[in-house]
Length: 345
Ligand SMILES: Cc1cc2nc3c(=O)[nH]c(=O)nc-3n(C[C@H](O)[C@H](O)[C@H](O)COP(=O)(O)O)c2cc1C
Image (tube, rainbow, N blue to C red; front, side):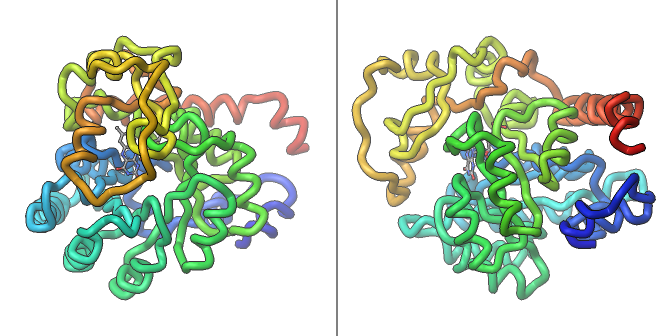
């Protein structure tokens, strides 16, 4: 069923039609419990978080750069595929996992990391900070999917012209490098020309937000900040504690740290000896020096607008279980909603 016919269909969709209307591949739907991707986070995503995500029915993602070099990445992905081969222990396959590749021209590791991704047949490759064109052919050749991370409708259109399967729309409020556009407006603008998979990102922290993402016209949502304080993440304990204590007023959006606008935790800037209100200007965005980039993320910590909703350090499985319960409650509320009965006749 196309998007146009879905919108045109009057009344409630029969369950079979509703299932057929998903844009996600059938094996993904079969293995997933929630329309969620645990977002890739530099120096925060970890192999244990990826395994916990996949074994709890959501997609986990990791930046290739979290491995110090391509050989280490090769080892990690070998261990990951072995860990997930036997499925979730309940007879169901593990959810897919994603590798995040920075396709910016200053990333000297791209060719080597892409070769490793092909070797391990990453089910999903999410490109960031550049054109996905260079990776689409290689990933499609083994049956993988490519999503491009974009922060404006113009970049979204360019990515679709490069042949991607999905778009990750980085809307306002996202942790790390952020977009500036409000999520509902962003999804609506992209749905004008794109009927493929959309992931929406920025400030999503609750199960009900996954439902809201679907209602907006997205297929999946990204959550990064919600998982920084998971036990499995690589964030150092002080970062997790700062995150638990922080609220929206502690977030500063600045391009001064990496050269591109990013949401950062003000207390981490202060702890690094910087004045958040008088940050030195930084040059153009550039990834050619990994050590400098690690420094920019290791001590100056990121979080998105949803930071106030992170109240404790928890296992990823517990976070996902809470999201699932809240998602189910949101659907139950929809079914009992008097407004739904009015419009459905
Ligand atoms: C600490 C941190 C590091 C991040 N690193 C990356 C990265 O390496 N690649 C990437 O595509 N996005 C990165 N992001 C952005 C996330 O993938 C995602 O867009 C964001 O966390 C979603 O917004 P939320 O934090 O409000 O859920 C990072 C975000 C954070 C908080």
